[in-house]
Structure formats: structure tokens, C-alpha cells
Length: 349
Image 1 (cartoon, one colour):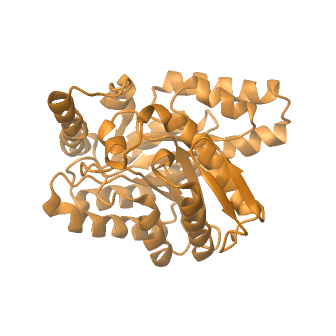
Image 2 (image 1 turned 90 degrees about the vertical axis):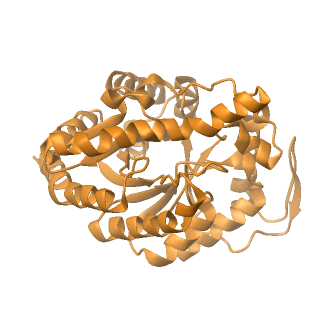
């Protein structure tokens, strides 16, 4: 099972933006140094819940200050991006990183209507925009003299440059927040990213995913390749003792949930507008299910329960809410020194 860090740093007020952005760069460099497999980037706008806002620009910055770790999006909100511009940007970063890029795509937020308002996009179009954009990007990476006329974009170009470093194109991974979207990806023979769910739901979905792949006619080698790139998200905090971990992370986790809802609630009060799915899944806001916190032994035991499901990797968010960089760094170093070796030893046994 691969280990990764999800750089999803909160800057609760604008005065913190500069410091948190630079601390996030430091987190990426630390994870590169400590042997993490991936650093993941988020995309959220206008509320400070993701300080660097734009994963594309931030990925380009990280491409020049890391050497080994893969850089992935969890996810780029494709309803807010022009597919040709995005294809060019991804091809460039793919070249800079010598193929370390994971193009993680999603439709856009299911919670924050102001993301769509700021870009003048109808949220009801988000899923269809994702599907059309992905098709255009793949064709732009792999075809010459592309001409495409769709619902949202009409494009015509001789050839996309630079050509991708990765052949035939950068690795694409899609988010599947619901079971049905996961099943659709399985039928296409594609891996997926899963948001925070209970262990029971995670187990049931992984079993359904494997079963659907086989029913769709994919052989065991293909099933294994897909499972190797299935990622699940958990929030993680490691301290020397369970009590110390709970003292730091429980208040930070609850403060994070309040911050993430603050502007959403303000827009609802001022405009009377919310997205249809405005309530986060219970598992995402539950310390029992969303948070793996404690001593190295405690966190290793919780992650071992995921490992037996056969998932390819865990997207671990270490920095939660107003947590300081110093607390985050200590947690990451403890994870690398004491948790990861134990899990790898169990896997090798």
C-alpha cells in the first residue's frame, strides 16, 4: 500500500495566505525527502480552505523543488477549466517532472456554490463538462489536426505542444464520490479515488469494484493494475501517545469542519442558495471514521485495516484546520519513522 500526503492547507484569514503557501511547499519537499509516494493537491476557491487555490500553478512550483515524489490532483475541478489550456498545462508539467504527474479529475465541488458563481458556471453542467473536457484532453494529447464540436467547446488545432513526456498521455485518475460513479469507472476498466467513508462502506465498495471489473470481462492482471491505483482518503495525525494526538487534532478537526462550512452558510443566508448536496457524508465529519489519530502503533493498526482490503494507496491529510506547521511536520516525521516501516514489514511478512 502506497503512502501519500494531501496538501489541503487552510488559511482562515488572508493574512495567513503567504505563510501557509510556503509551509505547503515545505511539506511537499519533506514528503519527497522522506520517501512518500505522492503529494496530492486540492482545488477550492474564494474561502481560504485551500490556501494555494490553484493546483495547476502549485503543481508547476512543486515540480521544480521535488525530485522523486509523484504530484497528483485530488482533484482538479474540470468544470472550471478550459480543456485545451488544461491539456497544455498538464503536458508541460508532465515534461518538467519526467512523468511524475497524476491528472486527477473531478466534476467540481458538491458543496460550495460560490466556486461556480465566481467562474460563471452553472453547477448543473458540472458533470457533463467533466466528461467532455476529459475527452478533448485525451484527443489533444494523442491526435494531430484535432477538430471537436461539443456542447461546451468547439476547438480546432494542428497539434498540441509540448507533446506529453508520458506516452500516450499523462496518467488520468477520476474521483468517484458515489457508488454509481465508481461502478461506471469499473465497467470502463479504470481506477478511482474514494472520498472519506466508513471502513464498512470502503470494504463493500472495493468488493463491488472488483466484482464489476470481472463481470465486465477484465482479467485478473487488469484487476490488479486497477487496484494498484485505487486511492482512499483519510485524515491522519501521529503523536508519541494517543492522548497527545487527541489533544492536538480533535479541536483542529472540528475547527476545520466549521471553517469549511462558514462561507457556504453565509451565501445561503445572503442569497438563499445552496447546492443540492450541501451536507457532507457523515463519515467525512466523524472523528471515528474520518480521522486516524494516535500513537504510531494506533495509526499503524488503523491503516492495516485498510491495507487488507487491497487498496493501492491512502491519501493522507496531515494538516487539519488551524494546526500549526510545526505540529504537522512532527506528525509526518513520526509517520515516516515509525508507522510506514511497521506497515511495510507486515506487508513483507
